[in-house]
Structures are given as structure tokens and as C-alpha cells.
Length: 231
Image (tube, rainbow, N blue to C red; front, side):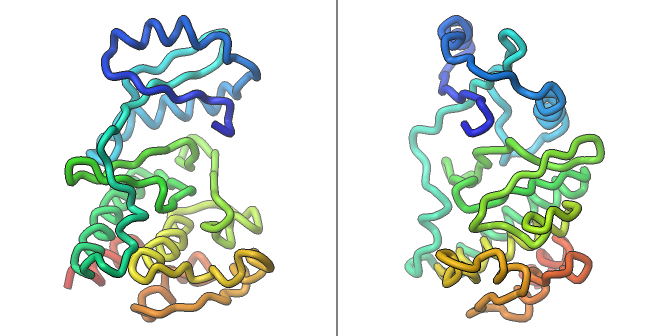
């Protein structure tokens, strides 16, 4: 991956020893020790059905590796953005993801890099594929992907739980409508559009206005989002 980590699929623990032996030829650049501590901390502190811990984690010559689960039969969350998917199913997906984010926020964990391709559905269960970055009380490793940037990412402001709210607003609007609120600016002036709130909304405008505020303090909490759809 972009952080010099290598992810390989292993079906059993027995495979991991061979992978440890074979993987050394891929070693190239040193990783930051504090970042490795952050990864270990995540796996020790998150207990949730969305989050499958690695089959194995190990270090070779100070390099960190993870052997993760391989999902052979899955459906990407991106497939659920289709207008053929009933609104009720989309709402249930949003509420399930929001409940997971509420769990993270209750533990003072901010994901910072939420996006549709992070989630898949396996055997009717949602799974988070990636948790490379994040912010906690102890660690500060914010991530982000341009199309899902928040004003905080762009201006390098402090990342808080309200950062996840903004990104969820982008992601959920896209899931419901197949349209990203800033998609017309993808080719030019995207960051300026985000900073100035030049989004286009086509559903639940009262909700998304509160999620996509350029001022973090004015955004709703994850509990308020869940309450909106739970009525």
C-alpha cells in the first residue's frame, strides 16, 4: 500500500509462517514506530463486527506486516448506490454504518478516511476493509482521500469526530442519489468548493446541510444523525 505495508490473504494461521519467510524480499523502507504502535492499539481496542482483526501481525527488521482475511464472495457498498436498490435498504445500510461510527466516537476514535470503497457486504454483514489512519486520544495519524476531503483536511485543521460527520454526509448523499455533492468540481476547484460549501443536494437537504457545514462545531453529532432516521 501507499504506506509500505503489504497485505496478503491467508486462510489459516499455518500459512502465516511461510508468508513471513517469503515476504522479506519485499522489504524496502522503514516505517514509523509510533504509527506501528497506533496500529497495534487499534486492534487491541476495537471490538466490533464491522472490524475483522488481522489473522496475524508481525515485524521483520522493524517493518510491520499484516495478514488479513480474504473475502471471496462479497458485494461492494458501491453496488448499493444504484437507483434499483430500495430506499429502505439504503437507510438500513446508513444506520448500520452510523452505528459503527458511533461506537468509534464513543471510544474517542476518529476514522478520518471514510469512503464507499472501505465497506463491503459479506454474508449480509458489513465489513470495514481498511483502518490504516485515524485519530485517538493517544495517536494522531489523520488520513483522507481527495474526493472525500473535509475542510479540516484541506486547511490542516484539528481532526475531530465532526470530521467523520462531514465525510459521512458526502458518502451517504452519494449512496442515496448516486451523486457526490461536489462532483461537478472534481476536475477543477474541488478544494475551493469544499471550503466554500458549494455543494449540490438533492435529498434530505435539512439533514445534509447540518452534516456538510464548513464549520465543524455547527455539524450534527452521529447520535443526531441516527435519531433523524430512527423516528
